[in-house]
Length: 304
Image (cartoon, rainbow, N blue to C red; front, side, top):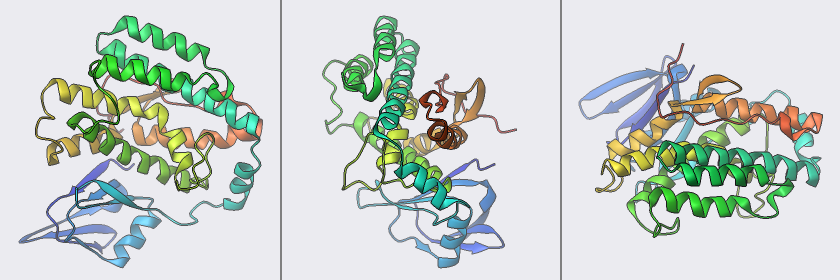
């Protein structure tokens, strides 16, 4: 079971040694077993990564993110053709009808809004939380009334203040965007491992987006990021902008708990199970068989 999220801030060299990642920095070096690693974020642009390590990361389904000059993730290393029935899955995805896609999107939006309602209830905004629950129940196939956008407006302005907007350049949005990028990469990783084509989405369909399907499936997971950023904001931990400490907190969310079919799993495990249920939903032509995560109070998942 993968449980480590690694942030490389100080550069050095990353290489492969006996099925472990060897990290060499200045006078120090240490190793981490590949089987323990879920995600690596490399933000120092002087870091050297060897080809054998890159190959081993792909073979083990480990997500590697590289960062730009602003230390924000900008690239992702994904495995290639790891799934044993790639063509069967691809045909299933290509042959999915528009009504099927609309029904699946309905289920995704409903669960996203319900998870947002949990966040507002948890932050003592019970009146607004009930309004979100009503919206979730009213979402129809394809979300024609765009309840997703209506809910988002109420949700963010309730949580972060009436003047808050998602497009603003501020510390709250910087932290939200950073964590969403990490979460999106984890979703893309799982999609590839299950043989899905990430660029072919259910609702998202931009020709310029290589991860439309990841942008569909990230939606019900976003609220766990929102709740963590809200807590950091309330504790005034965002005043210095993105720091190694807050980044590590956000990356670590992949190992926090969520409820999935009446059991508790890490976010990473819940992503895998959500993506795994897509094939069943498409084969059975029953959108309700797409299983999605439910929010729990913020707590690191205990691996057993």
